[in-house]
Image 1 (cartoon, rainbow, N blue to C red):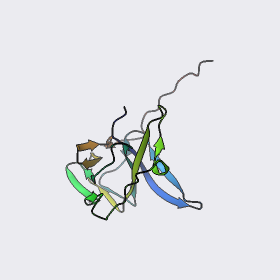
Image 2: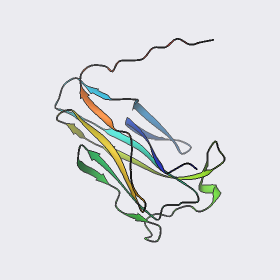
Image 3: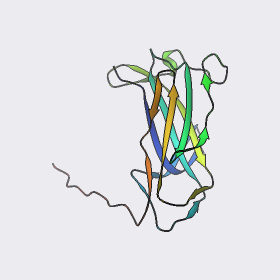
Amino acid sequence: MAERHIEIVYCDDIRTELGNKHSLMGVYLGDMFIDVMPVVLPKLCAWVNVVTPLERPFSRLRVRVFHNDAAIIDSGELTKDGGQLEFGDGLDDSIKGEDGQHFMAVNFVFALSPFAIDSESSLVVVAETEDGDMKSRRLRIKKGGVAPTVAGKLSS
């Protein structure tokens, strides 16, 4: 059985398109490299899905964004009975995994605007649930040029 987890995409902007679609612009696949520090970015975004198996719905959820050790965004406590968030309880609200298991995802879009960077640092998203904390992958912010790319040969 798959476990609860966080899916995250860090990017420069998230735009809402026609037809309830979203475009993620300037996606960071690894580290973020900044030529000159300190700097103020106009915006930095995080697209966050907190995922749980359908048979284990969240009864409590709080999502926070940390810049180093400081919480800079806090969703507040979201509870099933607190009226702040309605958790789906049917298959229509779920995602079906490759193994046929159904999941539900609670989506958050966080925008840090403006976002000041004084020195090398990192961002991480922490989801607090009734079962404990889950951490996303970090976005490490480093001083330097363009990140190295990995080139590979396609095999036939």
